Length: 113
Image (cartoon, rainbow, N blue to C red; front, top):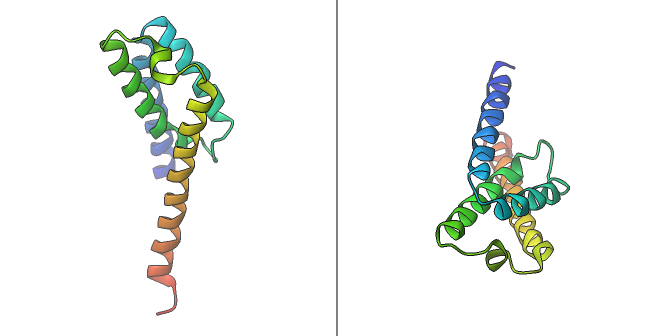
């Protein structure tokens, strides 16, 4: 129980750190990030932690684009929903990997030999 509590606290701290990075982005980038983030939450599994990895990658992509002086739509394209769908597809890939790892680790220990 204590481990779960520590993880929740750590996850919350990690999320705040992530959002601090978002606030450092240009205003247009912040707006698009938050819109994509809200869209992504609709597809998250469980606690939504499956989306955090993807959101970190998005922040890194946006930070690089902003540093190069690019407009946010140069990165996402004008069809931001399709861009976000690709991100969600990647998140589902991570969830599938986590599921596979879970089953594999249990079967390795408890499965028939």
